[in-house]
Image (cartoon, rainbow, N blue to C red; front, side, top):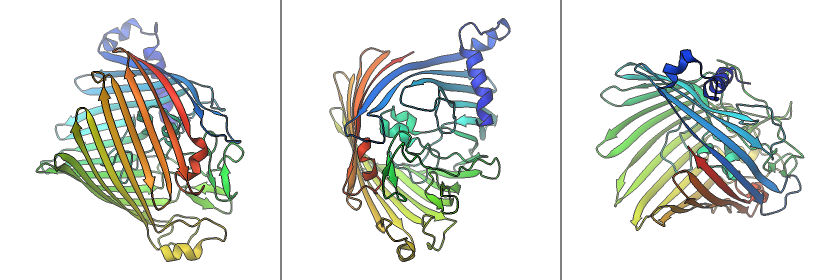
Length: 430
């Protein structure tokens, strides 16, 4: 267990459980804002997968979120207590979010001067302009939660980091230092099947990915940078990242384990009004430091990425958003020449389009949404229809689906075809 997580878990349990409030702390806790929710949900696969349970989701979770705002500091503790019937291993793993408890946030925010904020501890971090597409946002994601039907808020996994924000007159500078690498909560076969190139087929619980984790403190660290500034009505930003590929996309033939190769990312973004809507442009350069020549078949080549987006309110509580995403593989000839025989070959350019439709009905108590990924180059897709109805101020009923498909079982979305599922959820917020 990450040592950052031990103390906040104890504080959350001691400070929030009924009957644990001592008289000496009563004054402090009077200023604590406590809220949360109880969420229960279930899902089932729409196709058969011999390597997985037919039940894709069957869990209940209680989230407690406490916020203390004092004159000199702000303290936040937020954690989920989970009963998960699908997960086989119920021991706590705060890095991968497994077990009966998941610490979402435990951080301290101070403002030592009027031009600086400092936030220390576990926190949810995000930046960039994409809608469910991430170019310069290298903070960890929980793809498993995203694909099985948990609320979309769980796509953003927590980071154990120090974030310093500076506010000079000419812009805002954000610096995030993560002393021990925070990987994505990636798909490894325990719950969702994936394409295993060594086996040449999709695999699940019969071949859980073996991964060489990076968890050295101050040796496997990450540094993220952003400089942002408004120019007229446009938001502009420059980004930098020094760290590792967030999912284990490398491979060590000696140990037969997947690895996290080193990675630098440099990028820029622009977002502002256009033709009664909001447009965004984002660029990034993925510098794969362990294979800059592109000759190592077990380390991904460097990439250039581009995102164009546009969203607009069409009236009558209907909004639409579209995006185009390009992933260009650098040194493609070297990649092809080094590719082992029998390994599926990826295209030099991966094109991806997305569409988001959101419609509010019944006095905005009913929300219908549809998000689609479609890649003409990979010939695969991912569809996310969802309906959510607000029963009362506290109760919310929702249901949706995750449909995957593709012509090949080795493409990004095509490999998840047997993980297609439908789900329903009921949440009480307090």
